[in-house]
Length: 116
Image 1 (cartoon, rainbow, N blue to C red):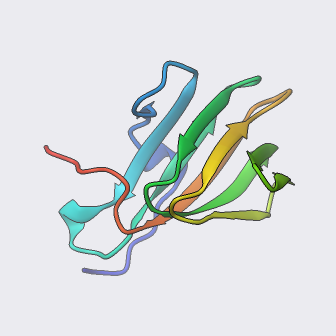
Image 2: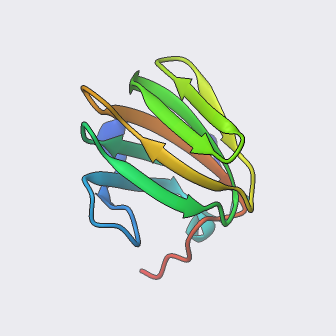
């Protein structure tokens, strides 16, 4: 694998699997590329909510807007330049308010099998 640089224009954003909200993700590196992690971008429209149990360890970097992640232990809110870590097995509700959000993510291992 070679050193690469990406920006949001490189990501093919598709609706996040298993939900019908205005939440889109686009992998840039995943199992097809031979690396041990998945990286990509996520775009959340305003006033969206996604509830799931984390299947992988997920690191979300907020680039624009604000993201709230709620668990049984409380809520963490992050804005531009801040990072949220969501461990595998934890039930989370991810929400946006106001302007929505743009994020970058890294997961270990790969969060979804990709067949192309």
